[in-house]
Image (cartoon, rainbow over all chains, first blue to last red; front, side, top):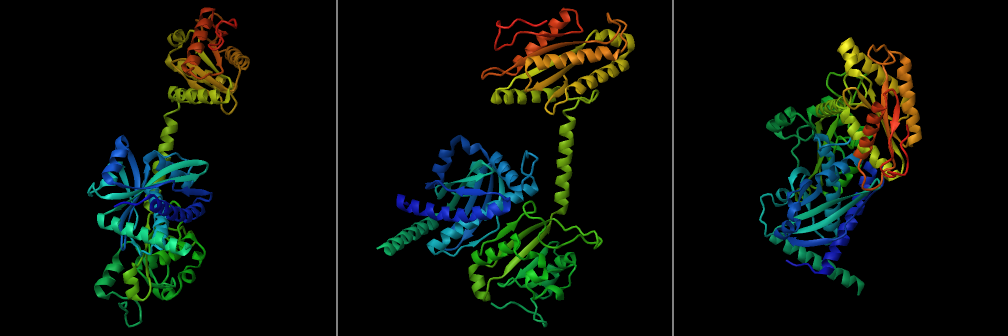
Amino acid sequence: MNLNELELDALAELFNLGVGQAADALSQLAGESVQLSIPEVQLLPKAEVVRRLGEAGDRRVSAVRQGFHGEIVTDALLMFPAEQSLQLVQIMVGDAVPLDQLGEMEQEALAEIGNILLNSVVASVGNALGIDFDGSLPEVELGVLSDVLLANESVTEPLLSLQVRFEIASRSIVGHLAFLLDIQSSGRLEEKVAAFIRSLDANVS
Amino acid sequence: MTLPLDEQGRLSLGPLGDWVLGNIQSGLLVLDAQLRIVFANPWLLRRARRSADEVLDRPLTEAFPCQAGSHFERALQQALRTGFPAVLSETLHLSPLPLFALGSAPSGQVRLHQSIQIVPMGHAMAREAGQRYLLVQVTDVSPAVARERVLREQAQRMHAMAHVDALTDIGNRRHFDATLEREWRHAMRQNQPLSLVLFDIDHFKQYNDSYGHQRGDACLKRVATVIEAVAQRPRDVVCRYGGEEIAMLLPDTPLAGALKLAQQVVDAVRGAAMPHVVSPGGVVTLSAGVASERPLPGMVADTLLLLADRALYQAKRLGRDRVETLPSASKAGREPAQS
């Protein structure tokens, strides 16, 4: 499947709408301003993602995984380098004690943060593209990046890959969003995005 | 699809379902699309101290008034709208529902720590049911919260213990190394002088030989107390550096200030007049080496340590019971040593 630049831009815009709402919700939770942005969206085969991550593939990450299914079926993953996830949770929780690792309760907080973000983003994209998604509960996975990304799945399948930047308490924390898509779903996504752009063009003209 | 109801018009899944839901060890609530409570399991009702009649068919915000306008209510509304499940973690929300430990006195009520999961019916099922219902699961995480608090407190206590010298109650070598490194970086960033004084008890081996190790320990403690009394600013740090060597780290302090404080300590210990038969003056005395630097990029913290150590050696060589310093590393050769 291929998405052209115009289609990727359209998706990036929809994702940014979604993270805007998530930022409001997170700001309320944190009691201070949280800003979120998605600088770029890429569609890559998994093998390519793993290759690009190269050595970083051995890095330990904290991930929140949530399944969404409708006309398109996707596993959505929000991943942070382990130390960044510690910082994020610590800022959100407002705990003065530095953390060495995510305890049970902190993992749950991370699940909630990821849940807010993933729900908003998928709702925004689903609304715009006219897809009704059902969702599963978020689960936290701690492990090596390549394991989390490739768990039991074929490496030839594509994934939608996005960077997400959290600006909070004058710090910048960068995470990674990935939507794992099988061949069928990525084909549908392509059709839906193309239709969405045609409808925009129709409205303009 | 119609929901299975009993003779009172209430949700019932039959004997097997009632048995399962009656014995499950977490709280279950089912809400309809108007957030009215259509089902609450016994686990939840007992901890809410309500009967089924008191909560069923009533809006959640009426049955549990504190819920209006809360994060919890917002999350429920959102789940209805989007159809996506949501979690409310214990850490980010303080006990949303008024649930209490069984057996706790109603007067001293402490809410259970709760982890909440909201699961809305999927699109297809909601269409069949005529509206979207929400399942709310409540888990009591109070034991986990208590366990983590204990662990955190222990970790803090152990951290503190690992940085204190057991004999003198001042910082230990580990604490000194960590503090020196931190203050050195701070001084470099702020372009401030950092001073270090190393004290050594004169003829301490002979003191131990003459009076025994117990008196030796007492002498060390006394000296540590005197030094601590002089290093009074919040960021001043006093640590046992070696056997009878004590370090005093003075942030934002130029050489002149450090020399003055070092002299105060040396005078105070002599003035304390602790008897010492082998010492020339008959009392315990200290030698002190002072170093002060305004760290420049490329210089390492060990420079300061090395200079203070050499100055201490100089003080010993020149007859003990005195304060000495050497030329600064950054201005080597331009300032004569003070004596």
